[in-house]
Amino acid sequence: MNTYSPLPITFIKGEGVWLWDDKGNKYLDALAGIAVCSIGHCHPKLVKTISEQAGTLIHTSNLYHIDKQEKLAKKLASLSGLNKSFFCNSGAEANETAIKLARLYGHNKGIDLPTIIVMENSFHGRTMATLTASGSRKVQAGFEPLLTGFSRVPFNDLEAINQVSIHNKNIVAVLVEPYQGEGGVNVPQADYLKGLRKLCDKNNWLLMLDEVQCGIGRNGKLFSFQSSEIIPDVITLAKGLGSGIPIGACVAGNTAGKVFKPGNHASTFGGNPLACAAAITTLDIIEEEDLISNALKQGNFIRKSFQDRLNGISHVAQIRGQGLMIGIELTEPCGTLVKDALKHGLLLNVTSDKVVRLLPPLIITKNEAKKIVDIVSTLIEKF
Ligand SMILES: *Cc1c(COP(=O)(O)O)cnc(C)c1O
Image (cartoon, rainbow, N blue to C red; front, side):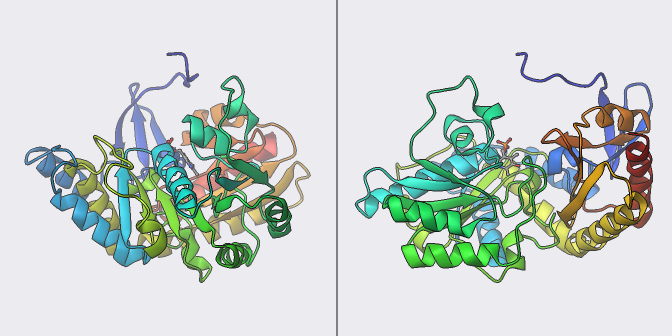
């Protein structure tokens, strides 16, 4: 259907941070399939895992035990401290799971019409519940009636949540991206997550973090919450988890992990052997190649370099981000930069009209990082 307006370009091959189109042109991929291909394109170890798993067993269903799924759940538990996982196939589904979980948690406490606090400028997906949760008219317009049971506040504003809670006794959870992606690469204030944790503890709400984009090493920690000394009740994962094999996960700690009972939620494909094998190997590669510290190092280098290069250009409003989630906000809509960058052999993205967004693979080297800075700075100078 006519849901996208794709650029006139077809990629036929990928290796590491590079892509080739059908005309033989080579591109540096600073978007990584929208934060998906974090270990680079066609990592040999991942290709081997997928090939072997495809030749052994692809799918059975959740009516039986799945060894790879149990292994992945244990791995996520040991890495995150959250010991229960539900597997699905996308970020939207992972958030849909979290929303259902929060509602059931409320009902179990005797709250018949549970409310979930969500943020302005957030993005949680395109299903009815997740587009309702998203703070973007663009994704909602035309799809009314939206769902009830959400209350919206500004990002980075703890007092706004306090105010809402005075008038609404049905709140059961807060759903928030620790770093907003689609909303313009917005960074949490110091102690924002700590403050959210405190509010949730005080009121017995679930703190649910949408780490679909910022998680799996991109922010310089495996999970974003790990830079803030808090433990959330729920995190949702997808994009970088399976390196392009569709997988999503809703991962929960002790309280939230006990809410669902058999029959409450399900997925035919969710957590099948192929997807779980890809995710296990992705996590292994991130650890073996020390990609998290590389994300932090290269991200710091890129932002610092932009700060130097773009210093004094009045059309540059702000350079921000964490790790390899980088945003350069301009003072004017700059969607045309996507095509300009393509001409220079670079893939990037513009989000929220004015924010140049870079989400390069975590395997990026310093030379490749320099190349990105050079091309993007030149384009912005011209712009
Ligand atoms: C991309 C994204 C989603 C939606 O994921 P899909 O796999 O496209 O459904 C949800 N939340 C965040 C933060 C995202 O970046």
